[in-house]
Image (cartoon, rainbow, N blue to C red; front, side, top):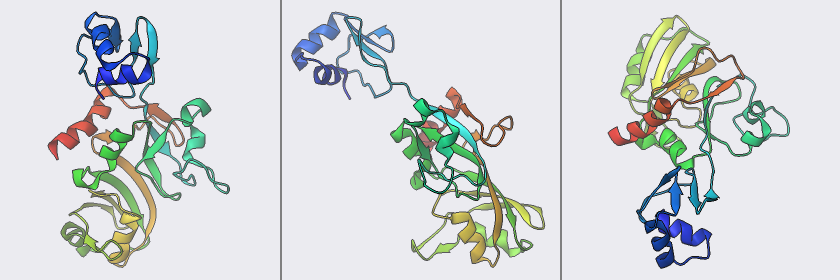
Length: 236
């Protein structure tokens, strides 16, 4: 939104009067005077007029080490949710960017920036998501080839993007996919006659689960981690 429109919407000033206020140096954006009425602002930047704060909302970007047994949901009458791991005042602002099943663990992103989280999960951007997978039966030699060709999903009537499988043990592998469809990893292994026993997400794009985080702990994303999602969109 343009700065002059934002101020005229939040105050009694007309758009023309607002432009004069901005030109005279009476408006601060992110702590700095701006003279440009067409300056683009979003819902997370501090904006003040004559020292009166008109907007002070802060953007939050968190990585959480999701434990097994927690739902990726805001509330549930039967099961604990990941939001219960976040302090109350902050919890109310956040939503989940890229969910995990209750039986899965690992990297979960929480934010109050809807546009940013859509970039994180947008299938068109093809942000790589890497999982450590344990299976019920030994992983066959043809599994990597099948995943590399793409697996047809009957519900969506589409073929997944080529995925990379790195076998770590007879029943353990690291899998990188480029979508994030409903139960995608489990459905891919089911398509090759196997079954996922445990699933742990290690990374989403350049954001890697911090090894210092125990299950249930979280930390703020770094500036570089946040920017990596915008950069992925630019490169897509």
